[in-house]
Image 1 (cartoon, rainbow, N blue to C red):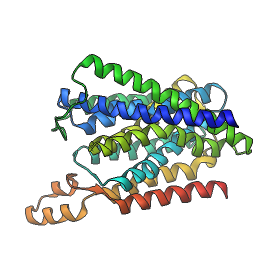
Image 2: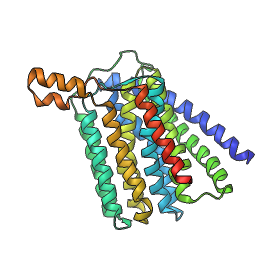
Image 3: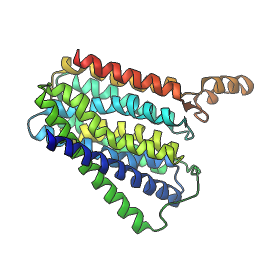
Image 4: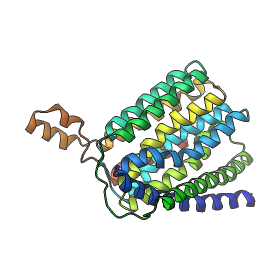
Length: 327
């Protein structure tokens, strides 16, 4: 038990440090490329913070625990929105600046629905994994080629590309190793308490692999890089489905019991809708549409924000969800 607790502490330290430096490198890269921090958060930073999910899921599938791979992704996606964005918005209000958020959110919903469809026959095949991964490649290409947006601030942490790339690599390693130690410690404690693999994967495993997103989003928000906070979560949820499930099933098809996970997958989809309900600027767009008589204003994401109240609602949802798994 003492060794497991030590793993937890080491993992947390590495995750916090990795999240801090990853945000600095991401903000610097955004300014150098004149790419909006949202795009950087939704691609490079999101991939870096999703690396633990990818490695854990591949390891779980290869070691004969495919349902833990799926449970890790489902639980992580729920935690990313309900816990990570919930906790972050309790610390600081998260305004939405990027106009890409609505289209990227739609892709998260579409990917979630596609995952449910693929899993309905109790098997996610290599072909289905290939389709998911192909969608990811198209998304990354479209994000890079999207119209450039102004960065939230011009202060960069690192001036040299060599330093930026080095920090990205070292931060990714720190996040991956930190998540590994934290998950190892958490799973050891959970097994000693005779908790099922499904509950472990959806709660402790998902929470451990979501800590990079949590630390990265909180640090980004405190540095006023709020678009990296939200973009990180949107991108991470996409990577979890399209990359983690896609790559894992390409390596080894995922066999599962759909009825066992149907409730969790539906809740994963629900959290995505709840997020948009909380941050979409209804009043602003309704007033604008009345004055301009333009339907374009109804999908213009320019002044929405996730507030303290929304954060409390999301965290309450997550606590009740986790509680329902143990009762």
